[in-house]
Image (cartoon, rainbow, N blue to C red; front, side):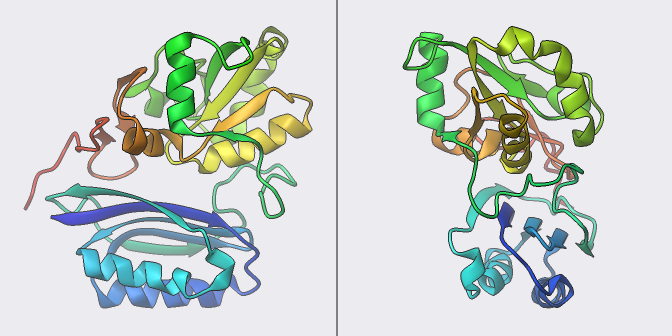
Length: 246
C-alpha cells in the first residue's frame, strides 16, 4: 500500500527556491510523486509513495521550526495516483490574488469537525443561529459530493469566489457561515478575506473535508470528496474511487 498525504502550512519563507530544492531532492531520492508548491507564504504538498519515503520528505519540514504544527492528512492506495513529481515555486501556495489573506500572524476563527457534526445534527450553532455551510471549491469538485444543503457557487477558479458570493451576502447576515474546502487551505484564505470584508459571522472548517472524514466520517456529507489525482475522489472512509494497481 502507498501512503498518500496532503499537507500545507503557512509560514514566512525567505528562500523558497532553496526549500523547494531540498524537498524535491528528498522526494526524488525515494521515488515519491505528486506536487510540491513552495511560496514566500508557505508550502503545499500532495504526495504519494512508500511510507518511509514520504515521511522522509516531511522530515525536511519537521526539522524547520517555521513548520512546527504541520498537520498531515493521510490515506492509502494500492496504485500510485500521480504520474510524476512536480515541484514549483509560486507567488502563493493557493492562488487567490487578494492581499493580506495568508494567515502568517493569525488564523480566522475555526470550528473543529466534531463540533460541526453536532451543529449539523441540531440544525444550528450553540448560540441558536442558523447554520450555512459554504463550499469554496469549484463546480467540478462539488459535483462529486458536498455537505447536504451546502451553498455551492458556480465557479471554476478560487479567485472567482468573492464575486460569486456577493449576491448571497445579505441573505447570510443572520447565519453562522462555515466555509469549507478539500483540506483547509482555501478556507484559510477565504475566511480571512471575508472577515476583513465585513463578514464577521464566518468560520472555517478546521482541516477541511478530509479532516472531517478522518475525525467524524461522512455524517451530513453527500457523496465523495474530489481530489486532484488519479484516485479522483475519496469516500468518507478515505477509500479511493479509482485504485487500479499496475
